[in-house]
Image 1 (spheres, rainbow, N blue to C red):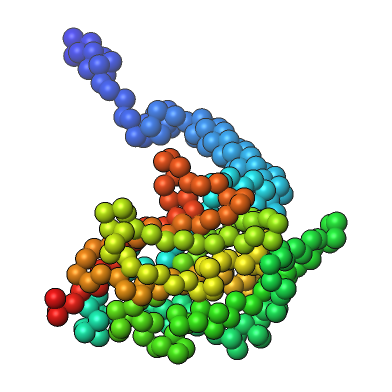
Image 2 (cartoon, rainbow, N blue to C red; image 1 turned 180 degrees about the vertical axis):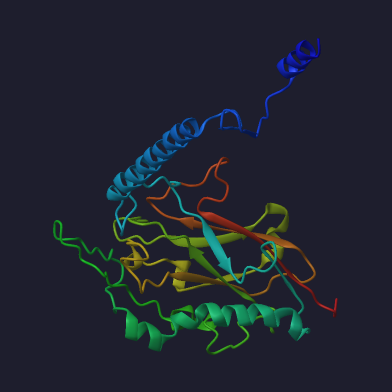
Length: 289
């Protein structure tokens, strides 16, 4: 009777899961079974890794070190200003040096590479009003490509040389405008360089006052185009346009819009409001009013 009860107890007992000393199984599998599973996943992941490496290698073979293989961009490049200020706002009081000193220091740092001595050393004195085309000779790269000088003095009173405060102390601030770099772009034809114009909203048109542009007419001369890329044209100096606000109304928020005008670049539409233009707010406070 006792033997039958022992058999029933043995039959109903659960086998150990982690290690079964009777069958020599670990977590329900023998050593050979675990070995086959590990071998399968090892081969599987080596295959996946090899496919990834092969795909990356083939893709890298299609890339050019100097020019994008595929270039998807807006028809008209964007623009930017210096100094930027916070949230594209330039707010200051001419009587408060601390309020505008940050802007003049930012302009000093930005214009450092445009010093005439630096430009003469690194770049060429090019013939204006013509594209500076530097073609490759078949498979032979014409690199590094040369760049044209953009001398700081071409910004005249906005260069920070004759007026170290860039007009901010006198309430006649200078704002620098640059066109975003686009490889291969030719923004003009028939010798007509693109140029910058600035204005304010209709209700603020009276407050913006008279403007002066440097270089004359606010042009980006054709000799600075095309741009060949950072690696091919290491010393490229981006052309600048300075706009000086001569008699802007004080204690008034003036929302300024500057845009590029060209006979080859399309005007930005409603879908691309920042294509070929830049918006910023300018407010000059005065404690006298």
